[in-house]
Length: 405
Image (spheres, rainbow, N blue to C red):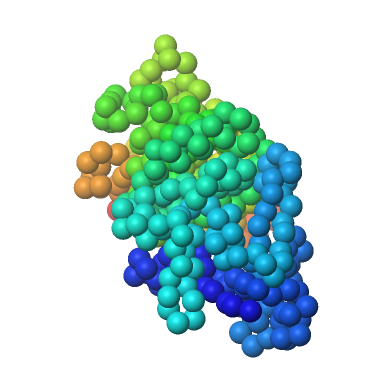
């Protein structure tokens, strides 16, 4: 029985990056050998075992064979005679198909080290085409390792997979999982660039794909179309270290512009309401978690109002707070302001242009929150229908004071 470290742990160590998790492959063993050595079985589709002391995962070397469309249609074969090279051959990219023995020796049958040096994502074998999740993984890796490029032959293979309908077999939960992980990488725009180049974005997120070629309003840089703008926005959100809901809201905020009739360009009147409906459709299709969905919907609907906050009347601002449920969910509203700020700064040369609207809206919300609604309710306890009106008026007065100060 021989044990090797494989996959991301070896790759990241060779790149000089911190190693988070280690994966191990066991060659020359059977399930019975592992049980006798004290390992605990956990795998369902193929034998995976937990180390008796460290509880790290150890998988028996295996081969796999495609039996049905999609990423679930595989039959796995494990046996003591499966070699390390056979196990590595089933992996997605050459940079993930490097193994390391206990003595430090590297086993690299597909020149993964060469591709690491060249900063290239290259598929190990034609078997890459059997699993459509690998397209999403390559795109996600591009968001993490933004200096890497996809080998032309690998991009061609991914395009063939898209044309063959393999991407259509992906279940929504897996698509969301990979997109969410990619959004949390250092340069999320690279993920969408890779997906667009091979044609997968049009199948997975056609609403987003539709933004390329759509011009921005005249007051911004007309040479930067809406798709490029959204990529700048989501990368800005990543640089700020924002949480996933804010990054997803940044990604979704301008979907309505993709549905604006070309005759109206570069104007996009009413795109916020249309965008909110498209966001709702995307979230339903991909089964997006509620916190990400709700913030994305609010941002798509309200980011234009936030941009106009300094010109808005106090009463309009308080109505905006009420519409967004900001008094009960203030943090969600603040997160919407963050996503709206990303929209502002995600334009060419705009990172030096101030966006005081974000801070102003937080001040105004604080002033409106400071109104003693309970005291007002007691004053109107015999006129309950007047309580909401009175509270609203007091909040408007409070916001008006912030405008005058």
